[in-house]
Amino acid sequence: MSELIPLVLVVDDEEEIRKILIQILEKEGLRVVTAEDGQESMQQICLEVPDLILLDVHMPGINGIEVLKKIKGIDDDLPVVLITAYANIHQAVEAMKGGAYDYLAKPFDNNEVVWIVNRALAEGQLRKNLKKLTDHYNGNFSLIESMGPSEKIARLTGDVHRVAKSDFSVIIMGETGSGKELVAKAIHGDSTRASAPFIAVDCGAIPENLLESELFGHEKGSFTGADRQKLGKFELAHGGTIFMDEIGNMPFGSQAKFLRVIQDRKFYLVGGIKPVNVDIRLVVATNQDLLEMSACGSFREDLYYRLNEFTIQVPSLRERKEDIPYLAKRFLDMANIELKKLITGFSDEAVEALMSYNWPGNVRQLRSVIRRAALVAREMITEKDLSIKRASVPGLAFSPRVEGMPWKNTSLKEIVQQSVLAVETEVINEVLRFTGGNKARAARLLQVDYKTIHTKAKKFGIQQNGGNDDNKT
Image (cartoon, rainbow, N blue to C red; front, top):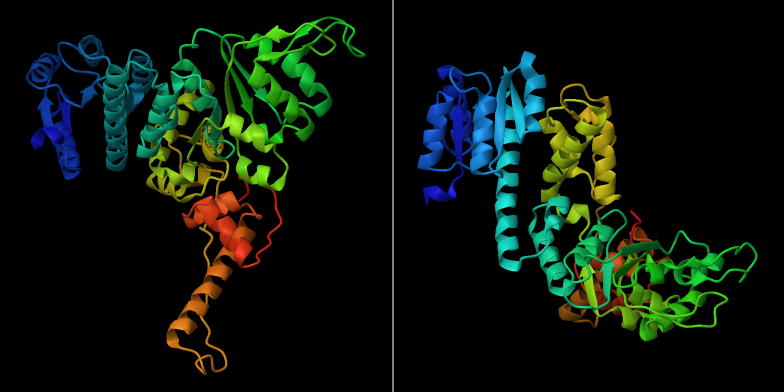
């Protein structure tokens, strides 16, 4: 059983430091072995490779930097956290370029030790899992490193791998900022088309009068301003993947032409008379419910079914909050490099604030918040450095009422059924009001399928007018 408990090797020539770290780490339920110099540390590694090494930089004999090089020669993925005096932080940061995971400055804070150790162990385990997955599937699993180690992302990665080798058209559904383009790139990267172009098109950013020219290209002189021939996105993506972001924003009038192209795999340049054959893989993304849009008449039903050969749902960040510490550390590392700063981590209160916030802007918002916090923070990011307020989760309050004399000529069973229907009506009405009439999002909040919400809203005569924008909060 003990081999399931992570093993930490503490290497420091100061006995008192070793004792302190043993006490902190064993309190966290970890196994700990120690070494007082570089030579002894290498002997310990030969006996049992640890899951993490805490390594003092300044030791007699072989110093920590040399030991780090030897460790990386044995296992490049083994996380090593350097222990250094505050005055030598610059040296530790330079050593991180040589493979160190992070550093602890003496005198260190116990909570900081726990935070860095747990984070390093989690990332080390993630790398092990990635290696196993890569060995098993021989695929591209950088998606997990980009999005986080949660079970939801692992399942999403499995979906990506399953569909990547096919030529299926894929709909990627998810809120704005949740990582839909990352998923699209992962599908392309794990496909047989990986060496060919990946061309992204934002359907919401191109005016309707320019969309056809942007997608299919145009001949010289085909319209005012067309002073030369231009290749469209479809032709540029030949042999590869074309990614249509926010496909729900495509004007209805353009959808018929788009459908014809993806069915026939050929098109005409604007002003052209010769068909152009094209070989592409089609991946689209949306933060709207295309099925509901087709029911409302704002999205072609035949186009929806042509695109919907495989669907991937990207979970929002609030649905996978266990990824937040990993992502926050990743974004802090990126910000430290960009800003040339040495922010060591997050206070407990900052972590609590990050975990309790609802993240309407998802991962994109988290990255922006961490980047700004790194700019204003001094040594460690505190709650005050975060440009967020702890969000209260919207709740529903109901006061069951029994008015008049409902029991007259009515059985208890009938009274209860009527009360249940009244509460159900109120719940659905309130949630649809909260989502701005978006039934798909209401279904996810209430943990039922879309059909249930649609049927019950119709049954109860609930009319909440609103768009399909799944990004409303």
